[in-house]
Image (cartoon, rainbow, N blue to C red; front, side, top):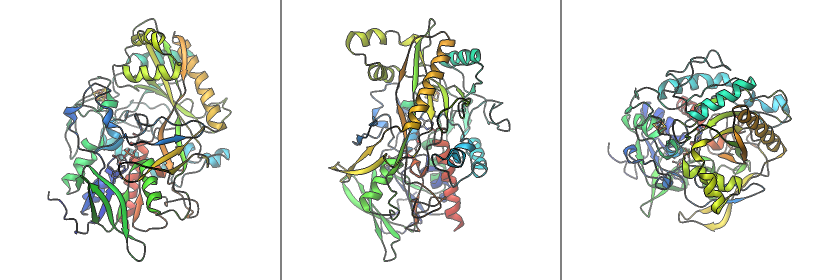
Length: 509
Ligand SMILES: Cc1cc2nc3c(=O)[nH]c(=O)nc-3n(C[C@H](O)[C@H](O)[C@H](O)COP(=O)(O)OP(=O)(O)OC[C@H]3O[C@@H](n4cnc5c(N)ncnc54)[C@H](O)[C@@H]3O)c2cc1C
Ligand code: SF4
């Protein structure tokens, strides 16, 4: 496939090749459109992944992000990825579907914000994705009996068995977690053979045998097989527009050279930090004043304990057991809820967490880390309400891309604090019931969400319910930024569903 000459007008430029960009890139290419994807990071060969956290650090976006607010977020390995495939190169591949109540939280509780999308609209998209990607999951999903997963569950690891024991003793229902990991060899339609998960436990460092879904082994090869062009190491830094304000070209830098790609439409899929950063920098699509606002990060509290038997949390797909029992806890004093999952964490990440979460250092840290093989954790993904105080703005400092560094102010509100305390208590009880001792809590938030929300009111949202900018008709956004609220479910499956939905809406026009 030849490279598009810079002066060719392509049907669409897609900026970013992660969970938001890749599915729609494939659908546009399958529809016969001439599409070019610009990706800031490089191509990687899965064979090159190593089970080493230090050597894998460049999977993560390393550009400096300034953190402020009451709970400044630790960026780097806790935020987003870079490379052809985006954050799906390093993600954990835990793929719950959203709960219908979370999409209508404001109607239910008077707090948060309703989505302009219903579960009825999302369900066929989830089914399409789960079938195409080869999602592994339980034969019987306790909270949605009609649901069927195409592949049997991934093997449980020891922390999952401990969670099953503790929850069983407390009467909390659990099940094998839905995993974007193939439990059997799987020929990816339009892509490579993906070998069954071998339980190595290094999903966050990239999956060598392609068992884990990442866009570079699923939607991106499909897109390329239909003529899409992916330009790696190309950083989009601006737009050209015509007299009506429509985008006519995307400006980008490749190997230090400023270039432009003429286009009829642009899909901005750079994630919930880089998408608003580019829009604020260029001053586009912000008549609502909503670009950068309502930054959210899931409440992601973890509880750790020590067990008499070996846990070896570095083995196995990390999140192999889960429960939706706390999506609406009966004794909640907060709006929304949370999912609980078993955790497997590889050694260096775990040591970092211990130093930060327990405040250990020096010999005390070394002594505790010696227990690594006997420790296991539980973690949540909990609702974070949108708040005007939590916001991305541009700082006065410029990084080597020539753009101002983003500044992200974030802090928990009362609802997140209450949810955190509830989850801390429940997870502590589960670990006590499972026989753990020396139980402690790691305070943390995870994921980058919001900043360009979708809605039905152009004065109150950046894009419409299909991702189309209210201000610029040929500018579409599809990534974690369009989420009006965080939802309790982890985001990537829903981002992919929105991506298919955005592609359909665009193609229908
Ligand atoms: C450690 C970790 C584990 C996670 N585990 C899970 C999980 O188990 N389940 C789940 O649902 N979610 C998980 N997530 C979250 C999930 O990975 C993200 O929510 C999701 O991938 C975000 O998709 P996106 O399309 O918004 O952005 P991304 O997937 O990050 O894609 C954005 C892409 O845009 C590129 N880009 C940015 N700026 C530019 C530019 N100016 N020009 C060109 N390209 C640009 C980036 O390089 C990147 O490739 C995890 C996240 C982390 C950090
Ligand atoms: S645990 Fe399975 S999915 Fe994760 S990296 Fe290893 S083989 Fe891939």
